[in-house]
Image (cartoon, rainbow, N blue to C red; front, side):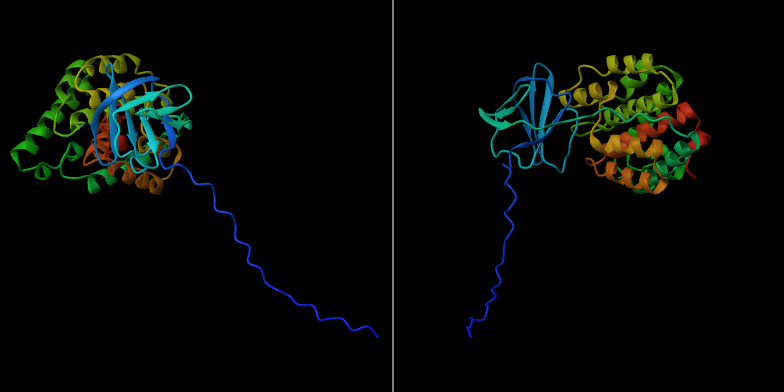
Length: 300
């Protein structure tokens, strides 16, 4: 009889290999309007570093800011940056190559909407803006209640001039309307400029209804030139139908989403800047009122 040793079983813990570590400064997305070239430092903020070259703007931004036509999204901003170089395949900061990355498509979605769906979602968007927009800015233009007018002189003057500009745009005096709104307010991109970008967003949205506001967009783009690098870049992209992601998401939801989805997309847009997102949404909504009829989308 052959005696065999009992089998001994052991447990071995196999740990999965960690995912490859990504260089924190490797670009995640590069905007599709970023032109190749060499850029010098323009300004630096906590979540963005801006560079300029011959009137063109490129911004290194964190994921919290997100993708845009002129943004290069990095997982982490470099501690110091003075020169930026962009070519077809890579991005370099102060001579350090950051590698290549995916291209961000800033064009707006195209979809032939059901007019009833669009009107329903516009009402949801307007109601959310009126309830949640900050007190500063031009969102007060959406209210028709005189008692809701701001009491402080600066805010009251802002609303009054904003209303004047909106009336001029709606009446077809596009150049005068743009001049009235351009530079109105405070901040890196004043409220009037954000409103104009929102108005142009509305014009591009109307293309899905087979409207062709080409002359109006051309007039607004001409009137928007030459007034500051950041605002000029915003309005130049808006005239060409190029927008940052929260604006694109809102358009997509307005065209084919639900009121709940529209409220969520509007809320995300309102988080953009102190009042920039709200002012852009206000410009979009007032443009749609003017072109589709106030009663068809007015939120009660």
